[in-house]
Length: 335
Image (cartoon, rainbow, N blue to C red; front, top):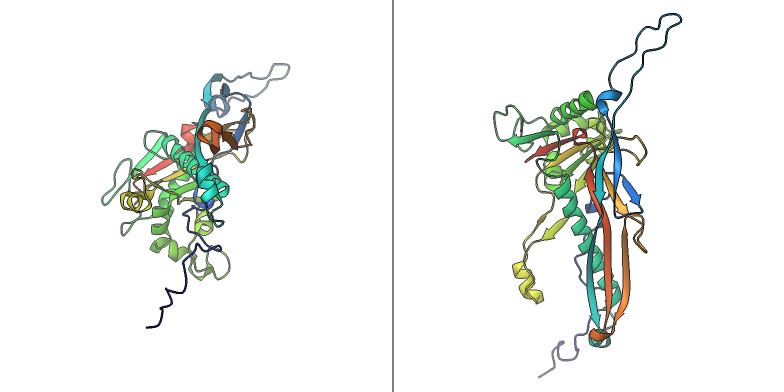
């Protein structure tokens, strides 16, 4: 009897591959929508100028030898932020490090692990702060038929008109505030419906509105159709299943889904933070926190002698605030 191919080789870990489900940072949109404001203190106030005062027509004819008509504006210092510190660590015990195969870079794995967790945390906070009902002055809900009032026909329904619906929302915000929205955030599920929507396809085929000979509906084409600076696709996922303690058990208990759900958000976002510059939202990042970067984050590795381990720890210190609730338009249950 001859030995089989499995008898003459002992399996060892491959040094050129390993499998880790690290999400692409492109799928996270929390840091891409609103301007980032570096702040030196964990909490503070900011000024808000009266929109009504700035948009009122008060000029009058000036008679010879008379003073010009006078006017003024109100300003409020009631706006506040509070940059909370979010943190997570992963420990690498000495025994694990000493017994690890060379293919397992424990420090790199720990860094990627906590970074991915931090991005998921930040994305969730964005959704809670901005991407839900009851936040914005303008809000409509998708229905499957006969929309009325603050409703629209879901974009997954036959006969729906996403181009007109979004354009009307853009004009509505501009008509109220004077600022024309420039960004649309849509979930991955909504994007997947829109790329196959007959109305979208009809506009881009034959290169009528997007490039020469373009035949694909994508985020850039959508932005061009609506006259927006950017369409952002929220494609990050999270697992809400409990940790079970083993690879196989965790896989069985996994409950993964898109963080953004089936919604869409239209906003005016300032190109950059500045004085007297309106924006639907701002992210306040506590850069004054020792060692923090521009987004209020820092990552450290330090020794935990009592545990005989090295600790890799990430922190993010930030707050996300609605600055102008009238500068957003939320589409709930878009599909």
